[in-house]
Image 1 (tube, rainbow, N blue to C red):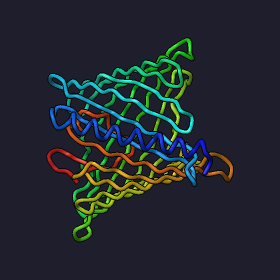
Image 2: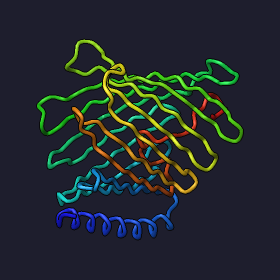
Image 3: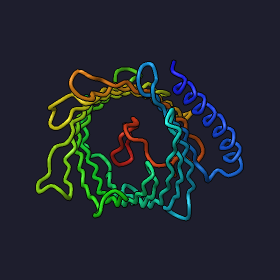
Image 4: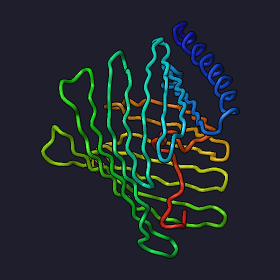
Length: 275
């Protein structure tokens, strides 16, 4: 292992240990706070890694405030940021500010994810869903704001197999930016989730465009009772080149105040029924 990589690994381990100690002590005093520690390693063997610490507090009513810091190794650098979120049922608005790679960035994001629609009640049960995200970003590197609207329709089947529930699904991203005259399909995802009771196991394969080129393959294991999520991914970076990635997320306290994790498997609800 290279000396720089070894030093980076030691730095990440030290940050992780210090964060766990301080945040556990804080969360014991106030249950209004939620915390998440995320670690990521890229390459095999690991050549680049990050540790991200997030702390959130639920404010009055639907408001919440989050602050985060992310350290990188072996580059010995860090980014900082925070956001204020308003959430009402399936609609949320977030205003965030961050300093990333030495440059300031401000973003306003609105996200809507209404409950799923019951398309067919039987074996399998079929659900339809859609979520939309509208984002405007002001970056220190650009003179004008950048806007993007993404709408993601999906279809999910629910198949009970004894004590296990299998949920295959298909979705695609329809996006429009301020630089484009017409919307385009920017990504397609096929996934399968196994609900084993205390564990959720998900496999997701993603393609660029309308199933044009392979983009990534991700396997995620979630244990909601203890707040642990582990994922391994294979990313296509061009030609015949691929990149390996391993992620670990641990969260506790008032986790509903934390920003949602992208790609984290969960139950799908329609009305008062969740699958």
